[in-house]
Amino acid sequence: MENPNTETTINPPPPPEQEPDSKKLKMSTTTTSDDEHTTTAAAATGEETKKPRYKRRKVAIFFAYCGVGYQGMQKNPGAKTIEGDLEEGLYHAGAVPEHDRNKPQRYDWARSARTDKGVSAVGQVVSGRFYVDPPGFVDRLNANLSPQIRIFGYKRVTGSFNAKKFCDRRRYVYLIPVFALDPNSHPNRESVMASLGSGNELFKCHECSERGCKVVGLMGKRSYELSGSRFDLDISSNTENAGISSANGNASDPSSEQIGEIKPEYENAESNKVQDGVLDSNEGNAAKDTTNFSYAENEKERFNRILNYYVGTHNFHNFTTRTKAVDPAAWRFIISFNADTVVTVEGMEFVKCEVVGQSFMLHQIRKLIGLAVAVMRNCAPESLIEKALQKDVNMTVPTAPEVGLYLDECFFTSYNQKWKDTHEELSMKEYEQEALAFKMKHIYAHIALTEQKEGVVALWLHSLNHRNYPDLEVVNDEIASNKISTEAENCNAE
Image 1 (cartoon, one colour):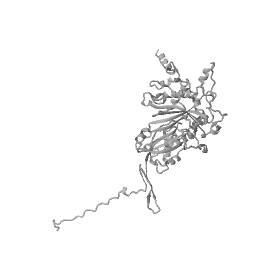
Image 2 (tube, one colour):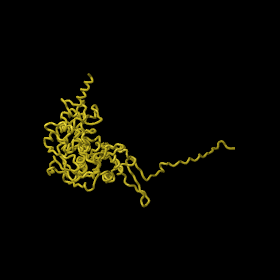
Image 3 (cartoon, rainbow, N blue to C red):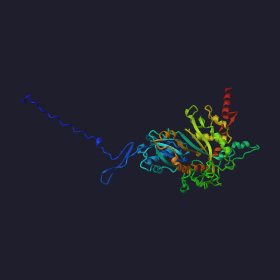
Image 4 (cartoon, rainbow, N blue to C red):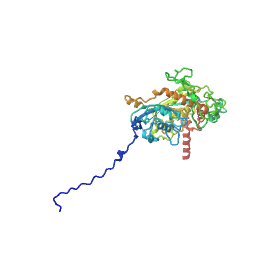
């Protein structure tokens, strides 16, 4: 019989075996994150050796491009754009990881300016967080881009930097052929017909016929093609105007520049005989100027006076599309607008129109140039510009061709002032020579040869008439089209 006072010892059951922690058992030879790339490789001894780790860097990238063949700067699904090609180039250069491909918001992508279809740029800037190490990032990126796009370099910026928001000013340049400012060059059909029987009859356009010369095989979609040594260009390191000389041979004269030996080739060129960048006279030359018109002091003074109407803060709703007068976005500030320089490219003279502003709307600069040329050619009075800038006036103004327009530079004045002690200055100073070479070789040559072959501006000039643009006609200080609509309303009211 058991003694109740005797204590019985009961051994507790053994603890259950703990399952191994799966996280601790996982071993990886490669780790990646949004901030680092880590790679490992097996050494000859069998031990694992880690390669250098690279971090994303917030940088601003400076580059240029020739816009021919592209549907503009901004990425657009289904369209060939500069931004689309640049994003792919960054990926293939190792600046963007696989999981961020086609997702620019994940690496803080921003652009300083948008350009329209066919518009070029010399000083475009984009920003984002990229893997720029190891050294040689610029060369790797250029190797994965079309020759039409040229990366000049990059600079480290603050973590909050945004290429669009931090850009204070933008400078655009429009090259307009000198003959376009001559009222007697490429007259429209209405002017020719109206002069018949008068004592001062006009002849139809000697340069290209009243409708313009359409060169077979070169009208329509434009393409771009490089051809080896024809792009060799010697850029002197000790002169700012390397490759540019004045019309009289004096390179120190800034008012007249001449650019030569720039001869890009385009597809279908075999259908038109081009010798030294000039279209064979047997095939026709749409841009040939047979008058004695020149951009002298009087013409320069008048054209600059016309452009000066745009300077200041105005409502530019008539100089864009899709933006109404009541929209605050229609108000824009233009800092300066001048046309003081004549450049000669492939034997053709162009007036260099420079406009600086805070920001610009769709087609705005091309419409500003379009109306200014119409006024210069006496198709409209100067007073019409002031009317077009009024909020309560609606009118249609001409749009100049896109081929002569390019973005020259983006400025970051406030940013540079604020961060001058800790960060590099954001400007094109460091890339001036490289940018000049690209501009002369690709952009200027494209503008001149396109005009020589296709007569883009010459054809456009024939459309500057009151039939196509009734708003250009002013009767008794009132726009003709508005007067007609007002009379019709009164008639209906009666």
